Length: 398
Image (tube, rainbow, N blue to C red; front, side, top):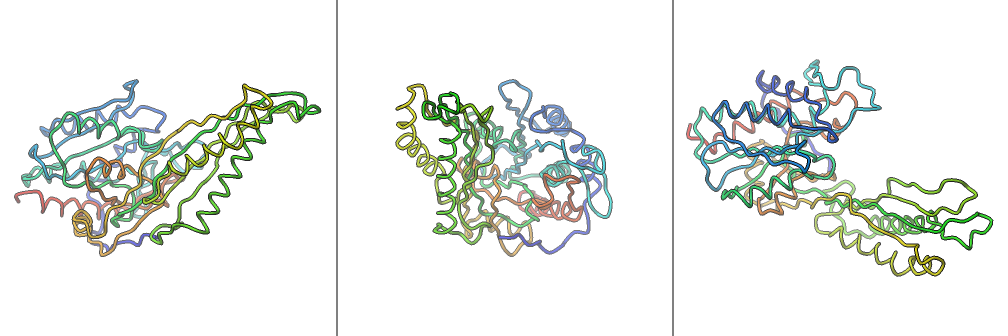
């Protein structure tokens, strides 16, 4: 389902949000690199305003999540969630330094403006306004690392909150770019790397070897047939585009020379399934096919031959009911009169899996993300500020 813009209610973003967005863009938090400098800047800003923060780190302590609570430590609050990492800029034709934000024609250009530092900027700019109004219910800030490589960091953040804090938030808003339309559903993802181990020999004696590339090809054809079955037979949900589960092989390596039967091949594939389908069931079907149909033939030639599967990344889908309280809440906060569903994944399913009703709603469009000259409309940023002000109406005394 294509997302339609909500009616414009604010002419543009505040100077505070624009300033924060420029500061955030200046941190080159590509997923392969550290985000610590950004997290420390946010921590220091919140500390200066009397807000305590909790950090959770990756194994190397090169990356960190941040959790903070505005207002009372109590149940029933709202989580505002965003990821701090961005995708790489190499081999993209940018018209300017991607980490030096440029504004023109009512747009902010820079890596991460749309995905998704715009939302974080609006949230940080709203902190003084929420504090000045006096929070009667808590607003939690959850800023994560490594969303772009599999929603890795937020898992540690959620686990830390569940283990060490007693708060039970009533809802979560993940501020991915949705044109400020509340998104109630997105697909699940499971990505897998497959290693096929064969037996090399001279190609003139091919039957004496185990051709790893050919066995990998048989698996890829099986995945393709699975994809076709989903496309033709469903199940279907017209809220998504495409409206069915997809199966895709994206990377393939194997062989060294034409006159050598290859002894190794590697390929990577993924499932993006409707929320009601379990991608692990599809994965199990491929593993069974390999173990029952292919491996016995390979081992008949060489006992050392075989097939190994390695899970790379994955996240659950999001499936929030249209009539849920959190849906009603975010529709009211955003001013939207409809909801949507998207094919791309977010951290929202992990919050929902942890028992926190969750909606995705944020400024900008996913079609503007991950591209050269990524941009965010300042009007969209202003709409996000209006959502946060309306949230203040619900959680603040004044």
